[in-house]
Picture (cartoon, rainbow, N blue to C red):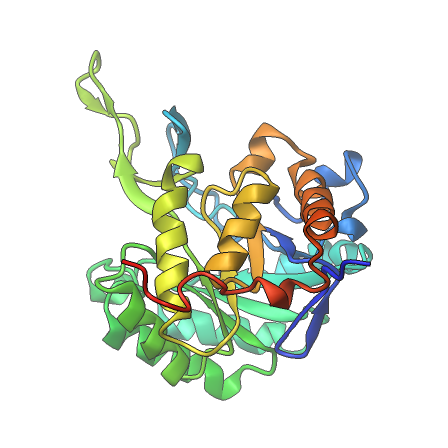
Length: 306
């Protein structure tokens, strides 16, 4: 029998498929479509210290093979998450990741302190958030900013700490190394790419904030390359994501070096896509005679063919 189970940071995942933050809410809506216990894990909607209503104006805009979003981290706030959403999520018998974002280091630390004493399994630190005290540049662009946040969070964090990397970093490999050296137990990548769209008839940007986040199949080749590169630079578990639409995409990320994968925009196209991918991975393993995913994890690039 093929074994699709994965263990990272001492946490057991029944399979490598996690639903990505921002595309699955807290799971309630999708529970009407399938048994959430089938999932390897769920990454929560991005949480902030206080409730956020999100951005005004258009929030989603389709582009060829992709999706631009400018949601603005709409969420109920960390306290409401702990009281109202987490109990439901813990009933689903799957691994729970709390995705955490903040506009300042102080906000990150306050949220970690609150989450330390909950039943979440892991914390996924979103460093793509703008640092409001430094002119709005995201924490995940420059290594020096990321190092400070990760190091400070790690000193108080009582859960395994995953740092979610932005593809917009100055150098994704250097950023990965900086985060690991600062204490990250695992990395997830990539978050959305910066993009934009223009309303040519209105002669203005589609989004009120002008710049939005690009996800979907169009980013997969670049995301895959980044996972591959990072896997050769660090020795911690990696969660890969970016345009995964079927089991073949998922296997590619695992072969490139990912231990686990996350499904994002695909959830909007097919609410049961995660189950299709889980079944597809297991069927692929059976047909290919793969007993354990560790046999193919990182198999690409053991020799540089470029």
